[in-house]
Structures are given as C-alpha cells and as structure tokens.
Amino acid sequence: MKIGCVREIKNNEFRVGLTPDNVRAYIAAGHHVYIEKSAGVGSGFSDNEYVDAGASLIDNAADVWHLADMMVKVKEPLESEYPLFRRGLILYTYLHLAADKQQMDALLAGGVNAVAYETLQEKDRSLPLLSPMSQIAGRLSIQEGAKYLEKKFGGEGILLAGVPGTPKANVVILGGGTVGMNACKIAVGMGANVTILDISLKRLEELDNMFGAHIQTLVSNDSNVERVLKDADLVIGSVLIPGGSTPKLFKKKYLPEMKDGAVFVDVAIDQGGCGEASHVTTHDDPVYTVDGVVHYCVGNMPGAVPRTSTIALTNATVRYGLEIASAGLEAACRGSEVICSGVNTYLGKLTNRNVAAAHGYEYSDLRELIG
Image (cartoon, rainbow, N blue to C red):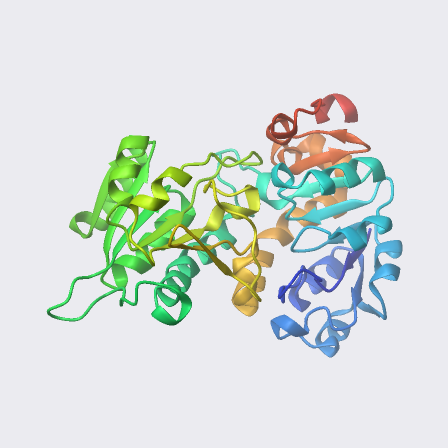
C-alpha cells in the first residue's frame, strides 16, 4: 500500500503523523511511504532522517494526497484540504466529528474511508490511540492552568502550590478518566488542594486508592459541581463520550458564583467542550474571559509539546496502521472489531453510532457494508 504523510497546517500544530522509525516499519512490511518535505521538522525530525528510513520526499502536500492509498495524519483535515478528498482514500487521524459537522459532510461527500484515532476501542473498552494524548493533555492542563492563574494573564494572581503561610490553590477536576487522572497526578505533585468528580463510584475508588488523602473524591452531580466550583481556583474539564458530543457540566450559571480570575481549562473542547461558554481557541490566542472566569479552550493542546506528543502518539498508532495497510481496510475490519470501531465514514456512509446521534444523521453498520 502507498502510505502518505503531510505537514500539519492547523494553527501551531507541530506534530507529525509518522516518525522515521514508523517509516522503517511500513517499508519493512512491504509498503511505500511518501512524506511531504519538512513534515517532521516541527517535531525535530529532518528530511534526511525520513530519506534514510526509506521514504520518498514530495515537494507539496497535494501530490502526497494524490499518491497515497492511506493518509496518516495527526489532526483533522482543514477546509483547504477537503478538495483533496477522493472516494476510497483511507484517512487515519484524529477527527472529532461530533463537534465538526462541516468536516463530516466533506468526508461523506468525498467517499473517504475515515479511521478516527479517538474512537478506536480495544476489547477492554480502552482507547489506545486517544490515551497517549489524553495523558499529555491532562498533565499540560495543570501546567497551562497554573500559568493563566498569573495576574498578567487575567488570573487571580496566585501560586498553585502556595508557600508556607499562604493558602494553596483549589483545583477541581471534572471527570476521572485518563485526562483527569493525569491532571490529578500533576496537581497533587505541585501541592495543590485537589477535588476530583466522576459519575462512577468504581473509578472514584480507584482514584482514592491511587492518591489517598491527597485528594477529595466526589460523585459528579449538579449539586456537588456547583458547590465545589464556588471555591475553585483552577477547574479542569476532562469529560469524554467516545465519538460523541461532550455533556455540558460546567454551566454558565456557575460562573458568576466563582472567584474573579479563576481559570477553566476545557480539555474536552475537541469534542465540543464540557463548558456551556466554551469555544475553540488556538495557541496564538488561547484564553478569553466570561463573567470573570478565564477560559482556556485550545483544541490541540499536545501540539505545544510536539516532540513528546509525536513519539507518544505514533508509538500507539503504527501498530493499527500496519494492520490496515497490510490487509486492506475491509479485510482488517472483518478480522478485527477493534479496527472496525475506528471507522467513522465509509464510502459516503456514517459508520459511528455516537457521531450519527450527535448530528441526527443515519447510522450504517460497517459490518453490513463490507459484507
């Protein structure tokens, strides 16, 4: 199969879909790899490293799209890339279609076979291609939140950990999944007061066993959320429904009750966000203020640390990419429910139930489509 990889064009996105080591793996499996020139520079990988690994360097992205049977990316295609779609092309990347109707319609119209990292689910219900970026985003959320608590950026002007004789910051984490657990780890490590909420008592028990007396666990309901937000200095939104729209737990009515200069980091913004006042921002202009609360809603947070993010992501994606490339998408899906779970669109049909529900579209069973 012909594998393509282009430079990401999203705002301040420096990650790349394939590393030179990934190229070697595809080449060893009998595939050909086309890389757009300078695609990996932002993550610290030179063109020469890709050539040494066996890839063919291509001058422009359009030619890579034209040559590839499977395009491996990091972020969703942007509108300028939609004309490059074609029927039967396999697109292997993050998509987040529940929050992006325009992209979904373009993929359907183009007949693209789109495999979304964020919906590919293992038999144990884990999300192996979302997990590495969730780990990074969770840890970054505290780092970024601590920065925007500084007065210069509109925050309260407090230090997360405090110093002897001063109060520590109160960190509230909405959702105890991979993002929430990693945010908790960093917040506890920095010495903040941490409260984490989740709907699952089992998950709260696991978190309590991990962090013990260093955290407060609470069941996530409207009453508990509203109560803890009144004293919160930093709030992390880390709620996830795989492939679906995120529930709005951080409601507008809570904002006037919060401290002026409190910070809300909406890590769920790729899926629409868990804040009613949330809208996507960029690394160039990451924050805005609503009712005195600073909102940080960058849609590609891990892009700020591209070297770490690229290596962590591609360590996970290459395995499934090789399965698809070696067998072909249809045969790979027939042989693996895991691969099947990642396919969101197939030859003009919407094949993810949660995405279809988010937009009120008809859902098609992929297994019936491929026989």
